[in-house]
Image 1 (cartoon, rainbow, N blue to C red):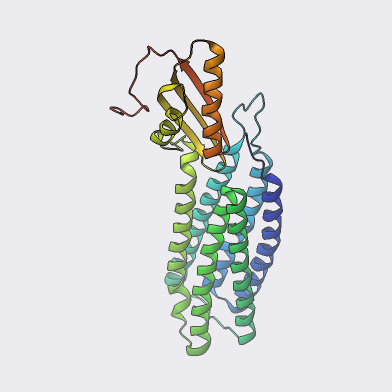
Image 2: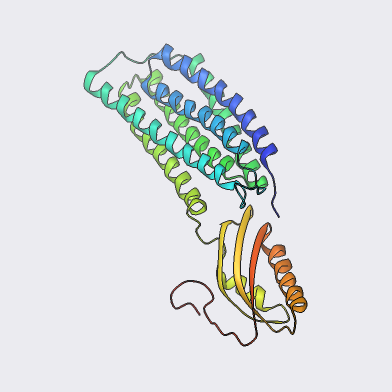
Length: 301
């Protein structure tokens, strides 16, 4: 059984896209008017926010949880691929920020000029970024969408970047510390890189079919069903809470196929109740069959 969250995901992505375009425009306008490298780098970061929203909309369009002839296991991995695309965008943003900072150190540039009204505009930008982060993360956890959670992580990095940039611009406005503009470009790049790495780390398990549920937990539930003698060769993949695929060999004490069928249905029912949504494949074996290998790990007991 699968849960289709795509309508909610698209709605959230459209709202955040509009807000991110607003933020990007404000940062770009103030960045060009002040000549601030760190703020222009931050605007570039916001370009990736908008691009990520568009990427998410495209990925969501193709990430149906329902199986079809070409994709009998559903389409969830399209969304995970979209999340990895976000990681790639963050890597590009990191490179652009570092390149701009190094060029300014080597070649120099015009001094940054900032006014109080421009600083107030940036505080509005910061408020919008904070709202987008918490709204997107909340909705992502509510509907179980990795692409919303990944995008919220990216936007959170934008929040810290904007805070750092505003702090530097206040230093320039108040104390005329021009060096702050270039100096802050480097931690901005590190924050961007860390966000990209976090998104990559969270989505790789889905794409490489990493174990979703400990086989011991599945084994304990299966053998608690009357008629089950043992359960072995357990495997699971997917994302717990979104969609898990599970398979196992079940040794049952059943005199006929109908009884064995009822036993396996009860096992499926209990596993579905505990790990919903889950698709389960069970291979039934006779009482005389013996195996102590719970999973595929060498030496598993």
